[in-house]
Image 1 (cartoon, one colour):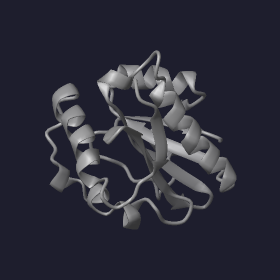
Image 2: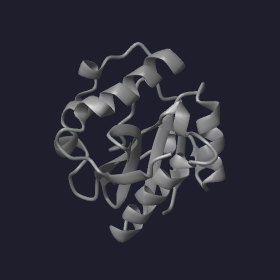
Image 3: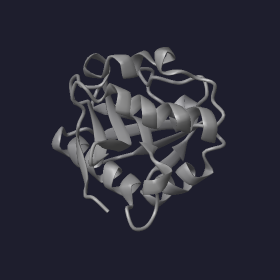
Length: 162
């Protein structure tokens, strides 16, 4: 097992990101979406790497096996987005989701963010358990800041003070 390195996105990562994210969206969660329909992925520097935002990839060898992003939404708040982990790297022994989240939260604290929000779908039950175990609290849509980038498929929302 090669070491998994978590690092910020850099140009050239696009195909590896698409190869990870799109099949999970389409096959595991039955969301009929393409890479082309995700403008945030086609312009990661312009969408995520602004202000306190960032986009990280987890790389094993030359394969991207995980992603997580933080979108600066202003007023000391950010949105956690694009958290995806290859099935081969979920749970023990990798604990890649926890490692990705730890990198994001350390970054949020370093940037003095006061709030991290996220949205997910009702069917991502394992994600709900993961976020709650990680200290996130469920909130209603009315509690989201107006600048939160809501996705049409998101029906469940969480909040954390980093």
